Image: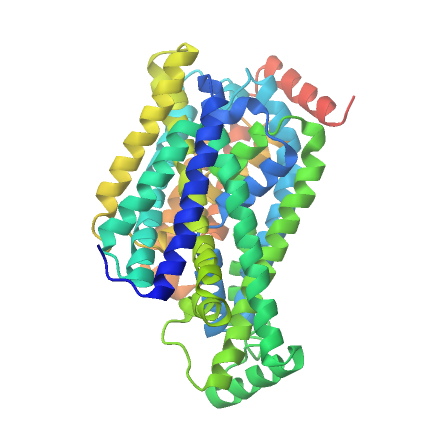
Length: 505
């Protein structure tokens, strides 16, 4: 067994308690998961509270607890534009996408996945929309899940000195257990517990640190003192003087909000909410959770500057600021719960991606060859798919250098540019055609990939790749739709029925 001091023993006890809670929730959900529809979408019966908190927790990976505070610690409020963009994007996603998508997906043959919705919405007899969408989801999510496993292995390695693979396999096993048995309901309920734990940690750390530093005034004074010594501008939203460089950083930060319209694991919560009339409640809860969590992460980074300025010992790794403060401020068991919150951020994202990947395999790949499998077959295919994706992701993640954690931002941009404009056009423009949607999706994904992976382009214009990707998708989708045959009358009738239902007529 690994050598462990008393502090680590307390912290590990807190993490074990958290992991056992996740398994318990998964087993509870297992008893309520009887059919394939239950497994893949919880029977479309999520309450607005569960849907909202689950969407938020599944969205925020370890980036919320480490990446964002670290960016604020290193650079200052210029990086806060990402938090602002994501908060605005959350509100708009629940406001303009969720009501129409929930109603429209039921009208279009009760579609329960994004690829199935696209196929039914556009009456795509070629099945290209569904198959291409499923392939994009699987490719991005398998590597996305692998990157979360890399993060979990590194987490246990740095926190407790465990071998990398041991930590990775512990997290993979627990996440697989509650996802494979509990299905979408298990994932959603564990997301709620994980989201509340993350929220509590992000509120507690900055408040207690501020009190111990002597109040907000002393925090600002210490940050200003640090800025004078280092030549930085932590308290400026423009990084000092406004320039073209800072303008591009601001635009790129706000553009993160565009990604919400195309994230399959978040949109799945819109499909699953039990009643479209409860979406307003979900919007308030979801936006509130994101706003408070983002504020806590931003303040943690800034307060970290003040804290370590007072101590005279700046951090070597800015991304450890949240963990460092929690271990200084709290009893080891409470610090262990804060560490569990970081693990929760990783696992909530991983489990949501596993269940959406399972849906893509069962509904959109297997469904291409055999339509309408019976409920029991669908249930066990779903569980088997979770196991398969987990095994592939573990194999990819065996080498910590095999996946790059920056893929999180790249995948966010890829999904946002490939699916976001198509979702909005499908919900708000009756004239869009299947060929227009397909061409736009391919254009958005291609431009995002090229922009994000060609160094010369990134160096020439430091703009987040989601911006050109979304623009390319919109332009191509509209142009091709106008050049192709108008949609069939039954498509037009379904669109009208969707609008009337959402309006309550």
